Length: 477
Image (cartoon, rainbow, N blue to C red; front, side, top):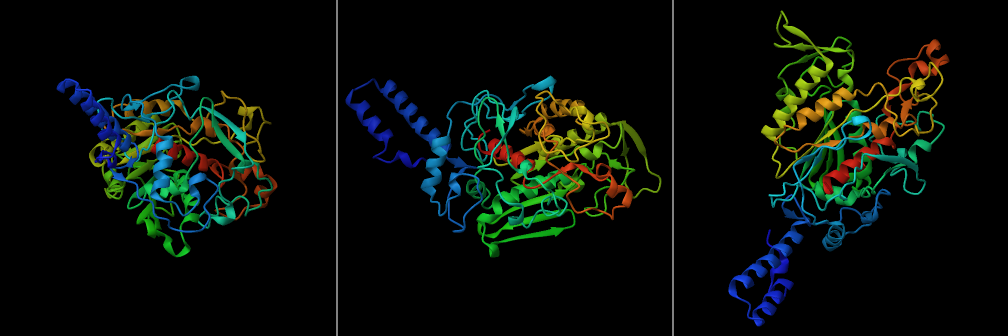
């Protein structure tokens, strides 16, 4: 990128003039001039996103969500330039994918980095995270001033399965928790910056209902900056598309609970107990992911129906089906290898970013955190304080599979390790405060524990933090 600082009045020109006056040897003069030029050029690259200058045009005069200082509108391009320069970190990068081990040997952050030999900036990045900081290791603190980032009633896109206040939840403490890493601070989520980065782009979440919750959280964090007549949401079978028309941008969700083709792929009717996954079938869904600039994958819960998974070798149309049974770990490894192959073939690391959200924990057994026997997440209003807590439903072997497979990817995949921090949040589930799939029986009504949802999460709530971590890794990898 040509730097605007390279004009005749720039520091580079002044430095060159000064050097000529000293009559340095030509080779030394050339070397120093080159160093000055590169330093200026590199500084300019830090304030570039995907190879172009970030051009900010105010899209609305409406106040934005309580998510950061740059949500004040109107915003000029010089404002964003100052913001990015203020937060830029010019330290050289080291490696393409970093693996860190955290509590109990569980995989930590698989972080996308620049190669130390590459001069290309990481797509979308405007700075670098603090050296040695693991943003996934920390604690939950109460925060009345900045949480929640939006009100449930202000976001019309939340599904009734996640609107806990509307369905009678009596407390709001779960909305006032902020994730605080031990050795640093998360960059504050900035809705204006996020929308500007998405201008002319496609962002897509791919996976199951937990990834859909994260998708809806992102829309809730952004939508108030967009005028009413300039946004829409439409669903086309497995694909849901939120469009920000002024930005020529879309944020999408694609239902694929296994990522591979399965008999659970119907976006509406998919509650099947006898699950089949077809081997080598990622292109069945993957053809809908092509051309996306930011992809956020997840898949975990649907694999956990038992200790084995049925794998279909042929087609679902075959009269006689060729089925083999694999252990859950082996079946999951097969899916992750398919994902890596698809990413390597279809995603350009110089233009696109790929994220993978780790397994979302459940809280189905209160005895695991010292509660009464027979309980679960129902009526839980505070986080778990034990920093070593790890629920039995979060399989560490799956984390190891991801580590092994992703480490061989030639295209960087940024791993959002939300598992440990979410394990603490037994208070953040929808519990009984949601639209029910079917009419409850008198026996169920008499025992709320029996129908409490300890899988999904209320919005606003925990999944907003997942997107804050995504924001941090997108702009400050």
